[in-house]
Amino acid sequence: MVVNIAIPLDEDMTLCEVKEATHWSLSVLENSNIKESKRYKAYEDIEEIVDFVVVKDKSEDVDDFLDDGANVLIAPFQKSVEDILEAYMFRELYQL
Image (cartoon, rainbow, N blue to C red; front, side, top):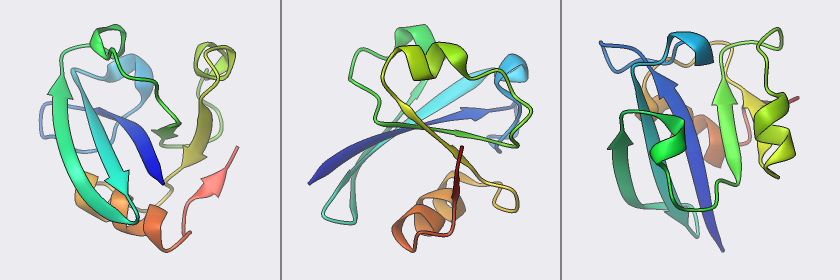
């Protein structure tokens, strides 16, 4: 099973609010292994279908992602892309 996960990042490449993102990470997981990880300047630059968007908390505006068919996950404690992906694999993220 292949899953595409998009994560908004700040200048330090850590999870930030969607409206403050200066970069986006798109990680492709296949059978719980990281197959590929790319960086984009904006969410709109991602051409692949996004299965999950990870946000900092439930107060963020995620309607556009839901309208696009993506599921939204909350990473309340994880900050780095690696920690978020690990939490995803161990089902430690919350679904919105």
